[in-house]
Length: 256
Image 1: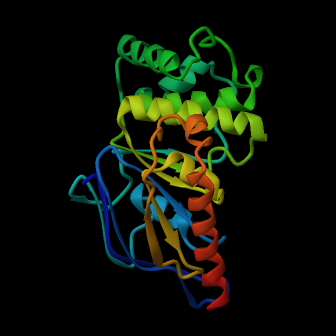
Image 2: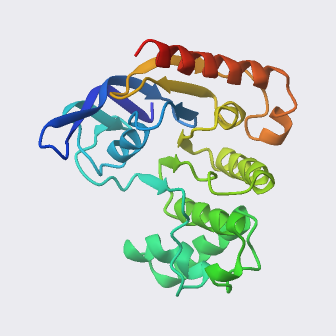
């Protein structure tokens, strides 16, 4: 087991001064090396789940555990990727990838070796001296993944990392990310609104209700080629899984 939520609820103070429950009684487990996606309506607490895994928020009730240890603060065992690449524009790509290692006090020669390895791993070798403005959106996202992998996290957290990309770049990047993450054997938790993306990239999918978010379904994606979404996309079963997810979310809307 790499990640476990045990009866987790999270409340925030609302603008009116009352309390708003973002997620309620959420329990699930993610095994080591597993790729799990979380889908649900906007505002149902998907990003809150990622933030609690990273230790940026603490549960109001329940426990979050990474590798069996309770998360009580900012968690150095996870790598967090957002919708935007957040590369530092004044640093070259290799220096951006080194940033997390530099913050942890890793020696210069060692962090350069790690950065160059991850550049190659993410198909960016030859671009180490470039700056973010010189790369396409897809290449910048690959650089952000290389930066995440460089710190050797136990869990990678992906918060809609492909949502701002055009359709063709998105498909290619899904494939590139899936291959890279599979090769590195990293446990991954993906937040997405794209139901087909969840099916293409996941071993398992958690479906959340409207806020407060609760796990209303857990679907095992029994398809080959998770590490190669472009191949999985050709399978007719992909549409069946996406339709199943759509019906679950539509049914949830009708019951509110």
